[in-house]
Length: 341
Image (cartoon, rainbow, N blue to C red; front, side, top):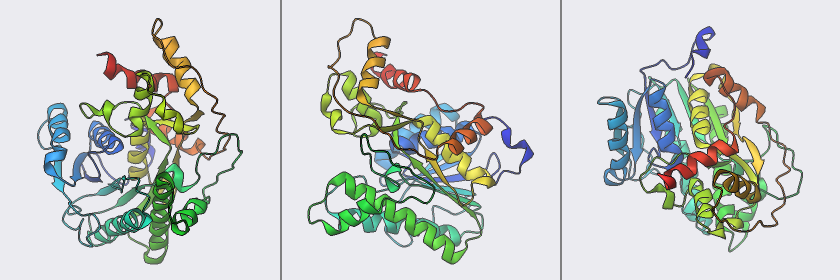
């Protein structure tokens, strides 16, 4: 991380302790890794110490003793769930969410909202907290709709998904997820407006993350990072996911850190959308990078024509890291490297 903020006073100093909820997930583990690389100390939460041990071992080996700690938060909906976890931290990045993709809205939306508000309440009681970043989602602003021009602004919300999830007796699981992220982010901004907390607050809205998977064997999991790898192995079930924007997971992780430390991000929604793509683009890159290998035939996917306010996010990456978005080509090369090694 460049000292690009030398002309501004960062909200959080190098060496300070950052709490990352959901640290063992695909994005969360990359956020923890990038935060440590940038010189911060990290406390990560996990529902189960046993399930999070892989991350502790990985980061201990990479960064040494005293840099990363792991704490259990078995129930993020408990009103005091994060009271202990926030003690002594300068910043909080809240990634933990309900990722079951259940079609039962009551099992997904209320706990996602409650967890976000619990983080905010716990942080408000801890004098050391100077900044919070909430991980929202691209789906809090819009759902992918091929060949339809949608103009997104900082004030755009996916109320369509929220209304559908709450009114339909059998909603789609991805729509329920979108509704949960929409409702949670709206609840956070409402609470911030009403309570005026003594710290800065920002939200990051990532679209489809691809690139480095830190978890051993993670190429087989259900995160978006595994989707290109499935196609690489000939699994066309990913064709069910429509054209949308991608973002390299390291760029996304870095944007979370920037949003935490840069005072100019206070009150902002940061759109982590690099560029639109479809699966034919991925196949074309696979063929170019892997001559001699056979891949599935192209499909008829259309294009994501939405316009999103992602220029600010790229400017922040350039300001703090000296470069903009990682290309789709480089992101896919990162992804497939774990299958080739």
